[in-house]
Image (cartoon, rainbow, N blue to C red):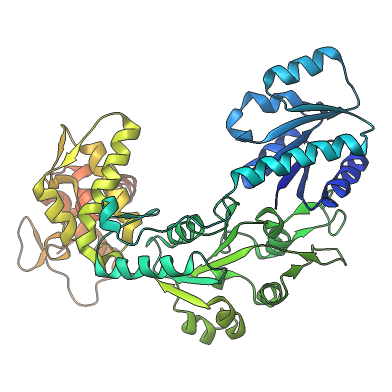
Length: 459
């Protein structure tokens, strides 16, 4: 379904135009200001923009000053303040057409027909074929990297499910790459030309979540001064990724289940149900059946979401992929920073020996930190986290790299002893101390500031 964005501060005019466009089987979003327009374009790039010239926060032509906002959209000026100068300026900046209010239905039909023909010619009807062997692409599969047996199993599952319309539930620890799996499924699906919208259910206030997901009508609650389109409408024709689904309130899970079963929903404050054309991919870092037992996830919703479950392995279970991932991250950082650096053999060995409790996200941060701290073109093991057996000072007698923890010591005291011992072992080099401990330099400075002026910790 083609998507149209109407940018007009006249509510009545925008509503009329929206109904005319909807009648021609287009999905429609409305913005009343330039700010709203930029937000709508970022959420779902439109195939066609019907743009008014005079808006409360500027001239409609201001949208042309930021070309990436518009992408490949057709832009048609729609205004009641026509002039030769404005039409010439609009065409010069790339407008496809110019309509004057009141709009003749014949003229609007011509614009919509042209937009539909262009989009139909560009959109692929078939899914993008997923590669069967990641080795053929240097270990890359869509947006994922790795050649371990555990990841090849994930690739095979994606290869099977992507071309279908089946609902997918991705499970895995935080930082393991669940959103990248969802994006890869979308990229190899028949919906790859449509929008991919990601919603972190744990980052939205429970009071606002229903409005954000399903939208609301003007006046439906205090502060609802205009109609708001939810994620189900913005993702029309594409994929909606519901991350941390177990953080969604249970009453909203009931409504989500209804949408999955009927493919229809209602905006908050509306009595009219709307059809939705969205593929749902959900994810959680909890064990699904444990989440059900804890009352975090409805059992009926679990079975509706987990039509095709994909379990993403933690990085510690595929350490063979660490050098490949680390080199990928380093190449990306080098390209962005404009200076090429490479790992030496000792650095790659140390990376592959660390358990990575923070998974791929922690690895990426460690690579970035090592890149910043390296002096030359080669990155050695100096600024990389040590394996657990080497990172923790031995529990033995006094010495430069040894501490003794008495029974009953508090966690705060144990942390201080470890930090101070590691700082001494690193010859007071704070950057290296932070790297060895696997914490940020800011955290280390904060801890040392807390300890300043206090009596020294006793072993």
